[in-house]
Figure 1: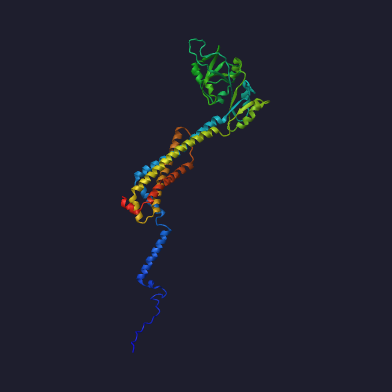
Figure 2 (figure 1 turned 30 degrees about the vertical axis):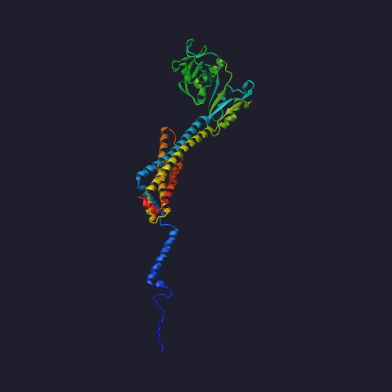
Amino acid sequence: MSPRLPRLPRLRRPSRDEGDARVPLFRRLPGLRRRADDGTKRRRRTRQERRGDHFGLRDLLSEAAHGIGARPGRLVLTIIGTVLGIGSLVVTVGLAQTAAGQIARTFDAVAATQVVVQPATTRTQGGERATGTIPWDVEDRLSRIAGVVHVGAIASVNVGDVRITAVPVNDPSAPTMATPQVMATTPGMLDAVRGELRTGRYFDSGHDERADRVVVLGARAATRLGVSRVDSQPSIFIGERSYTVIGILESVNRRSDLLDAVILPMGTARADFSLSGIEQAHIVMEVGAGSVIKEQAPYFLEPNNPETIEVQVPPATSTVRENVQADINAIFLALGAVALLVGGLGIANVTLLSVRERTGEIGLRRALGATKRNIGNQFLMESGVIGLLGGLVGAALGVGVVVGVSLSKDWTPILDTGIVVGASLLGGVIGIFAGAYPALKAAGVEPITALRGGT
């Protein structure tokens, strides 16, 4: 009789305390459960690392601030380069705008309000010949036009070969001097050319109407004739005729040849030297009245033949002013660009030197899990903050210099606010671009090599 096999135990359904029968075996066993949980965490950590690193913006700013503040002496020297670059840019642009505004104001005060009226000319075989004439009462006629402030007329006087001296005796042994030019003007010419007298007065309409023998000397003509004062009523001689000097002209803004001339009243020149006609009439007008004067002046002077009168008015926009302003801006912007280039190179050099000195620190960070992007971003942030600090300080100093220079010259400082803000931000941009190459060098450092050779 064969032996009886042992009876197998009967399987039973586990109770609620023992767990669900559908739960896998490794879930119910403690050792297997721990290993499964560790694998799940590793997979979760790997997915997080794929999505992004743990080095956030706050950590980046903190590390950049620590790196910048660790070497305050070098920080100051680096910022000085950026401050000089941005400050030079703000100063040059600000002074360019201020100088251009001053030049524009000068052009507007002189050229933009000056009108010249003269007879039209035609070319003949014997040369150019005037086709029209300016009447003797030109001041009264042109003064009626709206927008006219001052009117004066001028003409050259032909005195022949006579000498002009300050003494009545003709001394043959005296050195021969060039004879000053003789010119005739109406009483309003002084205001029309914005002239100033050194001493004495200018002749008036009474002198002109009576043809009084009085003269006004230009500054250089007075020096040549040896006349410096008029309180003793000195006289000069044109040929045999004596003329009393009543004034000395110091400066003019138009017709600078008057400073070398002996100036007669128009009526005196007509009576003594048979003056035939007026060469030019000068008008000081209000701003914007040029088109009206150009249209009406010929009819006021020659109603029957207005085409024989030529009127020169300034253009609506001063071309000379724009050209000067463009030249000044180009020169100052070139200087500012050079200063910015120097500042950027300074940041690049200091950042690259910092990368080489911190090789050991970079290797340690890489060994502790920092990625290449973390290292590169840290150095980019450091150079950008350095550039931004230099930009802010340089822009502030530049504004101060522009205001100081303008006040010392009695100018009105002109500086666009957008340029100041843009220059400050430009410092940060320059810092980022300057730190790009050092950041790439830092990101390319291998941890093993850095830890072996770093300090």
